[in-house]
Length: 113
Length: 112
Image (cartoon, rainbow over all chains, first blue to last red; front, side, top):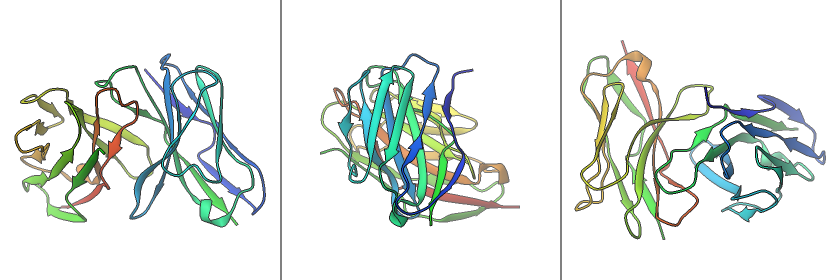
């Protein structure tokens, strides 16, 4: 059974803390993505990566960074968490080409106090 | 640029009613089109897809046909169940575009 696994389902952090959200996929996909999902705003792309050690900014990269040291792992980093980063974070991956669907993790719900 | 417009929600139906959720798109070239579903407390999962014009995707009683002439990919189901209550997202991926473009999502509630 193919899988995208996000390390934490629920996190509570304080303003100013550094936060790591980990994502691992077992499908050998080159393409990996981080989205955030907020009520009324749909899915917004934060960062994506086409290969190891490569990253591209999405639509809302401010306040975030990413790391892709291994093909199967894509980490989202909040250098200094703020309350407006309270959200649901979704990791996803897909194979090369335009026809393969995205495979999503179950999501990480982050609350910043 | 690429964009997806889907029917605003929320949508509330009685069990066994007919469902249509409209989706239209703007894209360069010939994109692939997708419907994803998100059940409460979960991530998104693929419901169905179509990769070329006139293709029909189907799964779990849901269907959608890739209509290039109207740039649409409407989702339909003949008889909804309470277990279909979820958020539905229409999405596309254009040729040579690594990232997908999503609609805003439509929340469906089915009442017994």
